[in-house]
Amino acid sequence: MAGTTQTRYVFITGGVLSGIGKGIASASIAKLFQLRNYKVDMIKIDPYLNVDPGTLNPIEHGEVFVCEDVWVFEPALGYRFTIAEIDQDFGTYERFLDVNMHPSNNITSGQVYLSVILRERGGEYLGKTIQVIPHITDEIKRRIRMVAERSRPDVLVVEIGGTVGDIEAMPFLEAIRQFRLESPPGTTALVHVTLIPYLKTVGQQKTKPTQHSVRELQSMGLQPDVIIGRSDSYMAEDVKRKISLFCNVPEEAVISDPDLDVVYELPLVFEKQGLGRYLVRLLRLDREDPQPQALQEWEKLVWKYKNPKGKVVIAMPGKYTMIQDSYISICEALKHAAAHLGLRVELKYVDSTRFEEDPGLVEGELSSVDGILLTPGFGSRGVEGMIQAARYAIENDKVFLGIC
Image (tube, rainbow, N blue to C red; front, side, top):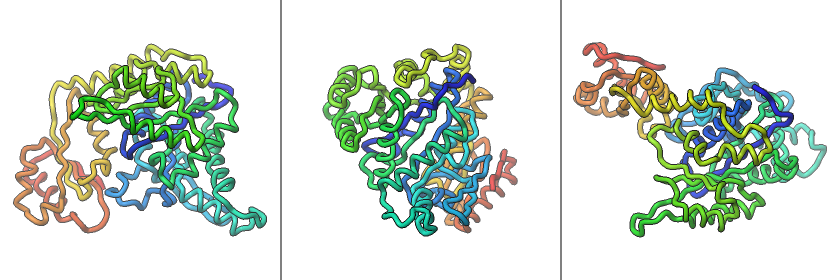
C-alpha cells in the first residue's frame, strides 16, 4: 500500500444512547479508506475502569475478543500485565478489514489511570499535583500516538466508547479536543454517530435528540465534521437540511445509516452517499475514488450474503444467551461460512439452564435443527444442560461442534 507522509486521524463519537452501532459505522469508515488502498489501523477507547475486559461477564459487556498478539502492558517501572483479551468491537474491525489488531489498540480508563497513579507513586511527576488535565489527558494522547508510531498507518480511526455526556468519557473527549488543536490542519476529522428516531404517531423522523447531542459535544469544544444518523430507514432530505442548519455541518456531511439485513453493506451505503470522497478531501488525501477491483470484490461479498440459495438452522445451547453479543464472533463465523456456501444461517439461541430444569425440553428445542454448536462458558451454571445437548446430538446423529 502506498503511504502518506503523516498519519491522519478520524475520531468517532456517539450520541443519544449506547448500542447505536458505532462500532460497525467506525469499521465501515475505515473500510472506505482501505478500498482506496490506504493502510488503516483502529483504536477503541473504553471508558470503564477495568484494565482490560478479560474478566468481564459476557452478559455485562458482550464477548471478549482474543487477539493473535500478546501485549505486555507496563504502566510503570516494575509492573507488568499481559493482555490479549480486548473489546468485542475489535472482532468487527478484523472482520471488515482483514487486519489483525494489536491488544494495545484497546485503551481503557483503567489502563490510563493506573499508569498515571503508579508513576506518581514512583516519583516520576516530581511532586506535582496530579490532575485530569493535563496528566490524564496527556496519557490518553500518548497512547493514541503510540499506536500510530507502532503501526504507521495512513489513517488511524479512533472510536470513543460510551455516549457524549457520560462522566466517564469526558477526559477522553477533552484529550481529543487537545489532540485536534495540536495537530496540523487537515490531519484530523470528527464523526458523530447519533440517533434519528421515527415517531409513528406523527409520521416523522425527529432531529431534536441529534441537535442536543451535538450541542453537548460543542460545549466541550468539539465541532463534528460529519454527522451519521442511525435510523430504521434513510433520512429524508428535509431532515438532512435541518440537521445541517442546526448542527453547523455541510448538508453533504449528513449521512444516513439505515438498518440493514447485512452489516457488510454499510461501507457501500456510505460510499454511495459520498462519505469516502468527503473524508478524503477533508483530510487532504489524494485518492478520492475507491479502487474498482477492491470495490467489486466487496460488492460480490455483500451479494453472496443477500442472495442465499438455501437455509441451514444451527442451535447454540449456552449460558449467556440473554445477550447475543456474548457469542458474536461465533455467530459471524457461521454467517461467513454459510455465505461462502451460498446459504443463509438461522441461529437458534438456547438457554442451557432450561434443560436442567426440564430435560424434556431438549428434544423439542433441538430436533428440528440441522446442527448443534455448543458454546463456551465459565463456572458450573448451565453445564448439565450443555451435557444433555451434547448427548442428544450424539444419540440422534446431529452435526455437532463443541467449543471450550
